[in-house]
Length: 67
Image (cartoon, rainbow, N blue to C red; front, side, top):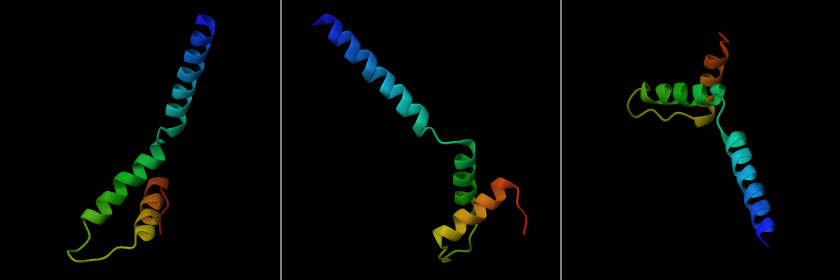
């Protein structure tokens, strides 16, 4: 019984660590998030920005692509 509990605790712990590693945002995702917020903040007052356009522009900026 005790061995089963230790085995179960080990498996649950390993699964939690694996999940945390897989869900950690990458540097590119963080860059897109930061640049996207900056684009929205610098938009003219009252402007309605399409979220897809903002994300695409932020991704181009983070990737170093130029128009």
